[in-house]
Image (cartoon, rainbow, N blue to C red; front, side):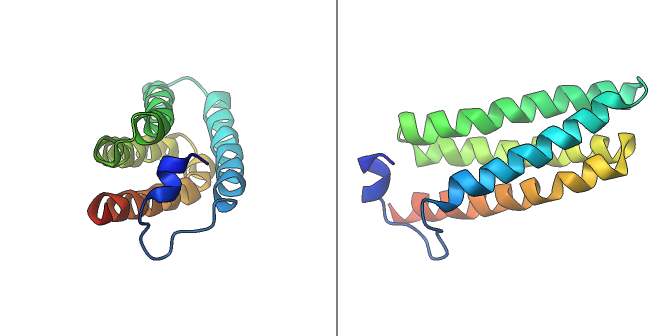
Length: 127
């Protein structure tokens, strides 16, 4: 963990640093399973939209780390994670249309993104 992050004032409920690799390992596994379920379904417009949106939200997910930690910008991180949330909700809508199981597998990820918004906003306000 970098010294910049360690120096930030964190909001209440901030988990210990060892929470994140465990939680994200589980979440990425669930996301991959959901994605492969969608990929296995018969081709349709909904499937193509679900795949495109999934890949787009994944780019936003990876971008958050860069803008927050590398650019040291909680503000850009906040913008990214809110946009991620919006795209994720739309992605889940199409996942549910293609496969209920795939949609349900994305719910823990959605909850983590909501938690990330809380943490990012807390850091933005407190620092």
